Image 1 (tube, rainbow, N blue to C red):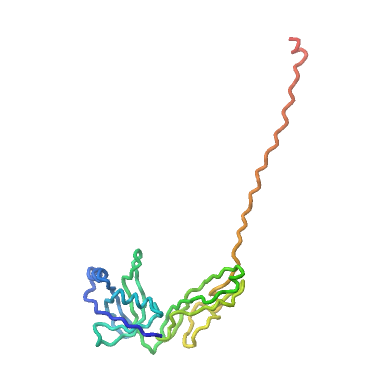
Image 2 (image 1 turned 135 degrees about the vertical axis):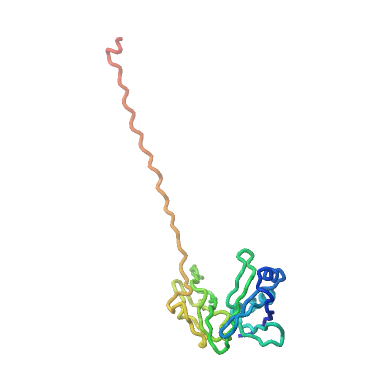
Length: 219
């Protein structure tokens, strides 16, 4: 995996007013923590972080983080958590996890469907049910994603977690191997029932008109 570079400065203040000032200036407040490492409040350039997130490694990239100058020792870190403004979606805070390159870590790796399923050409619909795989690996062995080959799926067939091709140096923690990742199903056909036409009641025959009696005629 490619090691990416990121520069940071120690945060001068933890006050909310200073944090707001950082964001107005295009910077992001952040924290670095890890095993046998005292948590450190830092600030980073928003543009630099966005470039890392757009890189091939993206969210799972292993980063060499330098704090306060070129002469400082780089810390190998992973992005642990990104907080965003719920309205603007802009990043407002980042947590970095300082890691040891000799100790495995847990990560959630995206699953990407690759290929065209034959069942799709037969009118089927390709559905993906699992989008991430929980894995355990050394920090510099975590892949940016894992491919899911669907090029052999016929109608009604599925790919399970146990079918995925995963590098030998990666341990899959979940979901279980029998869980369906993707499948090709027939589209559901909805049949609308037509309500029967209302029955028209037959008219009752008119009652016969009584002829006036002879007595009534004489009167």
